[in-house]
Length: 144
Image (cartoon, rainbow, N blue to C red; front, side, top):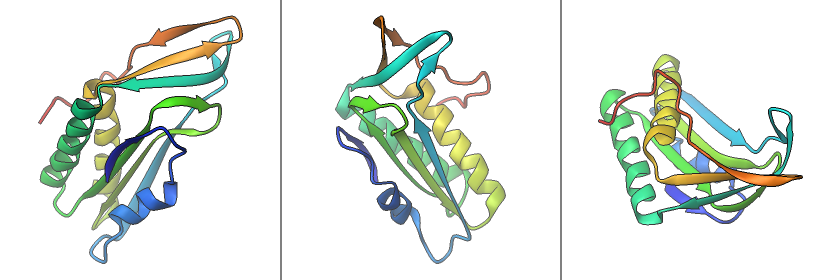
């Protein structure tokens, strides 16, 4: 399951997409819209994407996780459009035979998404708005 949606993300469906009898570890990462950026109050977020390219890149990230961590199953769903504060903007589910690989794959998927996927975020404040760059951590994985 690699998708973009204008609707609220069904977190349980994302989790079900990775469940498998061979996997003893399952992790869910939920990135949620928070109500602040520094001193500014955020009222909601808005996301846009180059959808064909973004979904293809999400699928590539899933393949990379499976190659790096044998038995890894990954699902990623990202919101588009308006996202109210506290709602998930992205849900990443990973499942692996054992927990160390599951933690590593989940982190890899998130950092790769931030670094490579054509999705753009606009923060809407009480007093204006601003487009925000994706901000991968300094240890974001390279492609492939």
